[in-house]
Length: 578
Ligand code: COA
Image (cartoon, rainbow, N blue to C red; front, side):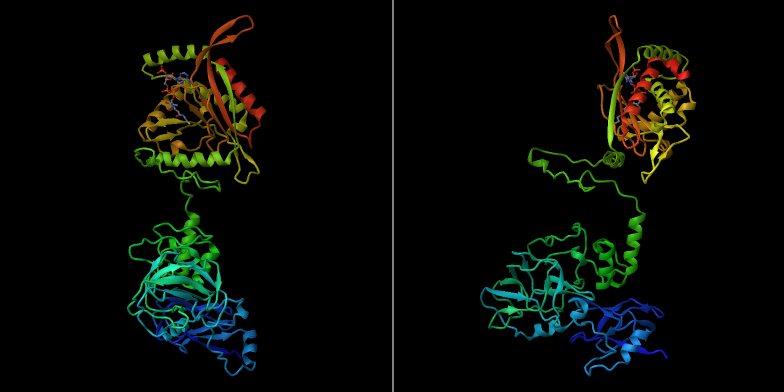
């Protein structure tokens, strides 16, 4: 026969009417021993009530918003077989099988334990109120946390020199099932801080010394003998006082006239200035930590903005489905960031936001530069005859109202021909790096300089088009680019790119491969140079070429053959017809 166990609210100190803020199970759920069932939360502490045994939830006796006290029914568990056996064994008289202890034996839980909500508050109240007549030093220690040892410190809100108000949070302690703050017992200045994030603390461990300002009205005075005060764990204060888990969202105690500063170094990412203190149960914090989620960046959909398990899961789903944002200029990819410099110290400055295109292309170029092992092969092509032909044809074309014939369409056509001979230049590496993808089309992009930055419109099926058509298309696309009217699809699908700076000047340069393409041709300004023909120097028009390629895909010899062929094609256009 199945055995049922009514789970009750355990000892939560002297506190009554603690709100239930989360139900973590529903009827029919199978729960493991120690699994969190409900979360209770007071002003300063959050605690999950764990299952005393494994079993199936038969009925739930409370709902979110109920206020509960020790002994109130939480739910009924139908015990799993092994738990039944345990439960039928004789129990020590003091044990209460129905009240899962939120403070199980430290040994049984590896030294960590849930914390009672009210224990320390009781002890804090034991100190007789008094007025401090003169400045004095107060040793602040870890209060009574229910006789448990080695509770991890997850946040330290103060540092030496901070001035804190009475009840301002000094630390957050967190065990498996509970999170709580240790507030300042009095107002004063922090000195001799002995605790850092990651320390494991026990009752009586020194936290810091508080130099009280003198007369402190209504403050809790320590016992006269040793002036050593464990602060209360649960007293009135900020309703969001559960603090941020994992060291994120840490905020030092607010101090009048002194701005809040970040908590001591934590192994986790530092919060941004806009991060708020997350509001979540200990179990949820653990869950978030396991997923590497910074709770300060999750918005809570629960009561009073509380973060739920669903919120964390949705956050992770969103993060996974969101494309990687534009990489900042530095500080990513594990490379050391370039130190920030305050340029205003050297003279006046003006900061202008980057245009969208520039930001997008910066991220793209950064990725390509970091991922592709680049090699740049340079050469000079003799375009003396080509240029003579181009000029004569350009005049004819203009006279016929056909527009200008620049060098670019000739280069594009020659590149297409060279790629047909060396198809790896139009391939792409598969994402797993295991194969090469060859395309059955030959679309070529060309870099266009626009007022808002660099864009790369793509001319489709270059191998199937004549030079005049290519001239028209490049002209139209370049105009669209400059007018900011290029459509997304007009910049996609390229197999190879050309970057022509020939209209501007310069000799050679090292273009960055437009990933996932594997090659890009840089073209610089042609100039007349003396070329030895075996008998004499001849004035020839030479076009500087700079071929960058992905060395994972293309060998140096292959690239050299490609650029030599390209030079021959440009030197003698009749080869294009072969
Ligand atoms: N050598 C000598 N002159 C050249 C040349 C070269 N390699 N390339 C072009 N020219 C000449 C042209 O013949 C033209 O001269 P003209 O007015 O006397 O007829 C002049 O330079 C301007 O040509 P341009 O307008 O640049 O036409 P294009 O078809 O050669 O180039 C673009 C079109 C879109 C590529 C070009 O305008 C452009 O934006 N280039 C910059 C690309 C860039 O920024 N690359 C850097 C990427 S990192």
